[in-house]
Image (cartoon, rainbow, N blue to C red; front, side, top):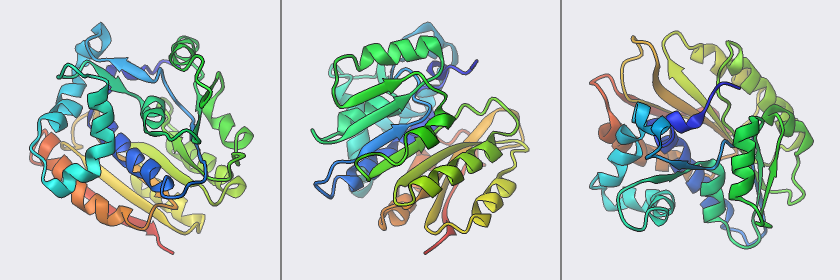
Length: 281
């Protein structure tokens, strides 16, 4: 439990994850029926980018800082609208000081009937998250290992939902753990939409991870990846998402937004993107 997201809040990986997450929430709202977002590794929910920790890395400056200042084509701006409006609403005086983590972003997008279950194991982060949602009847915060929630909290009573799994990847076997955790959750809640985040970096076993997911023979698994620099150097070079049971429009939307994200946030000439089906229908 050494990972603290405040050092990375608003970076390019957050931008991809949260932009896609906002699209998934909006899609679920096409039906009047309530749904639940289960966030397995929720963090503190709201990040102060003026803090010592965030300023130490400054990663947000080449992430959300770049996107907010970009001159976006109208079709792209429309797809980013739910996400960027939430960010701007937190910073009414302009600029950017506050950035929403996944649970806060989901909550900002909710209708009155939608619900959030946010899991956080780190004691300090759990307390901060609890304070953020204190008195909010649409949000439930639980001090729990997020991996356990994939069994204990699925299926949701609403029978509709989005499951976001964004682990810290502090251990060598996290790719296998992510695939296994998803597989167990899917057996309990096969109709849910899943969004699984993973890092792209030097020597990461991405091919093995994808093949393991494919071996489950689960239909409708969409992959989106964005790299902002070469993976020949140490550190995070990109990130990926596996979206299971995505809206039918999402692949085309990814082909619209990913080139813009790459062009906006590229850190060298090796920046790249791709969106493809791991498994189709």
